[in-house]
Length: 180
Length: 269
Image (tube, rainbow over all chains, first blue to last red; front, side, top):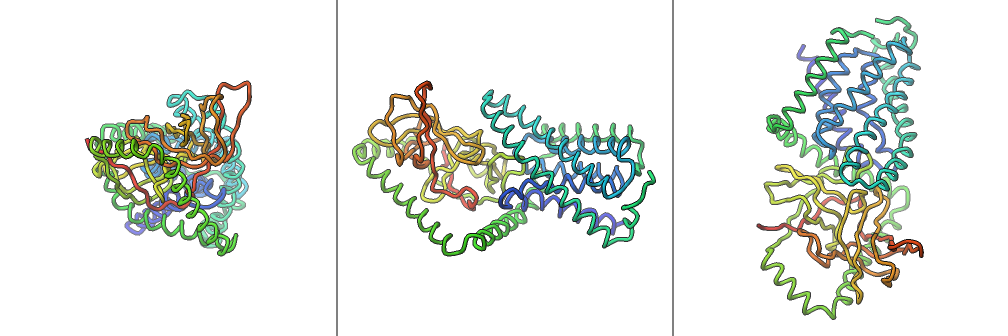
């Protein structure tokens, strides 16, 4: 029990620190990678959904503390994305395959971007009422989406390979078509 | 997909937890926990910020050769010094007035500089803001100007908490700074950011004559921002006859990606 608790604490700490302290400082477009989102989706797909919700609450809270956006925006975006991912997994991509992981990562990134965009635009709108800013922000956000999708998919791939090689627990993930 | 608690129960539970988080945060009940978390993670963040900054520099060194970077840095330092010199030269005619104002200013406002470390960058999308290790208890207030190397304005304090604060860089789209062009005409305008891609001075009247290379300084119209702090130099003028105002692209001598320490003009009440 203690071992499990320590393991999860360590994972959460590493992911949170990577997202908050390392990623924003990465050069070029690499800072578009959203490790928290990929980890949450990964847990939801190959592990347990309620685990990803707990992770989402803790990681979202941590990101919120270090975000210049109003408190709660990150946790809300991550959890809404997770529930959307859950619906996709229940209705469309019903198997726990590698392709399902990539598929939901792709859709999840789009949904998360849309939610963050909505909140940011609302903040801009209520803060400035300057339509030029909203237009410019929309252009930049659109330009960043392909980068974030590519980076998130690549990171999901790395996570999958890592877990597939490192643990027998996920051996069946590639071909498992049963829904538990 | 395993879902131990029933989905509806889980959704209700999550919504309750989120509302509870909101409530506890905005009623400041959660503040001690947040402060504790910040206090624990602050040193780690500071170290990782420095390390990742170092890695970033190493990467650039590898990419564009060390010599070029050194030369570039030297040139930037020289440019900043020259800008300062030019600013001083242009200001010579008003020196008496300026010094009197400064003296009066320092006597009435009694401001001093405080040095803060940058411990992180913004984690929310494309906004260009930095996280500083000092906050309200150190005398920081929203709107105070933040200066980089050579006393160049790099932004303003945008959010202050008890022991940390956020500063918005001048190149951020939400940044607004009342400025003037140093020289005979003292043309007024507003300096705004362009999503981290550059800085622009807007609302310059069409009839004002400005030229590339002119130095842009703060106008002093803002309560907490003193006049004559260097913002940058005009790089390009954008003028069209049908517009009421002209615009100018401004080049700052500061590299906004490598800021690790900043000066804040502290105001005493």
